[in-house]
Image: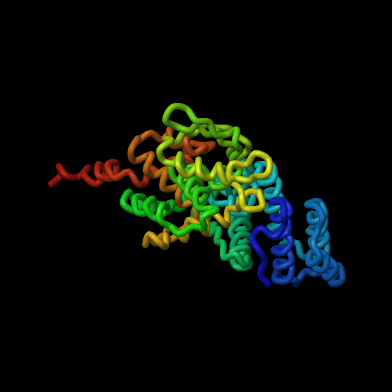
Length: 350
């Protein structure tokens, strides 16, 4: 049976729900050669099916399963228990915010001092858990967590290269934003929101939680105060000419709860899934096909273009709100001038 990706109202409850489903799956698929108490295991599986009310209750069920003889369950549950603590403390708002970059941050901050074998178990647990969600969420969302070559000692060597648009595709995408047949009541909102993400590289979660007080016009720009991962504050800037007309039109129609900048017709925050669907529709209308068409691709596009034009890795780190310069370093892979220098190093040998 498949379930909505964000099954519960809060992120932590949703993550715990997926942990329950995954633990139940593992308990029915692990080797039961050492099973000592079949009734105890059956009771644990039933309680997992009904759901728990807290992470402590889920931890107790995992301990009961282990004591019943399925000792292998700890290999999978312990890393997930720590992941739960990390992500809830980190301030993640929805399942769509989880990506390989965030999982690597978790592993780097959690597995220090552990043996290489234990680090390998953590990696396997992450891959299998998110692969399970990939297959069992009805929204068709794919995390594609692979963590290739990650061993806790090799940094981010296994991180996949991000998908992004080239400059011609960006131009086509911008034209498509302005010509896409949105409903009249949401057209200005959607245009302003998508352009804001593309022109600043902010995360979708950061954009949909912006408040009126977070945006300030100054001369020919808007200053945006962004609350990023871990509640870290940074400031980004967008030239007024890019979104002013759309933003002013939206402000006339805006009817949001509290002081949200963007909201749905009920006044509540937009979801990341909704924003990603909009981006996918615009890309399709522009004839642009990518391996990943979600809204996060716009952030990669901004970062790649920013680095290629500035050659300033620290600027990329500051603009995107990366905790580590190593996270930003992935965008240097698209520096053609640097690659040409590498390709020319043997020219004088002929």
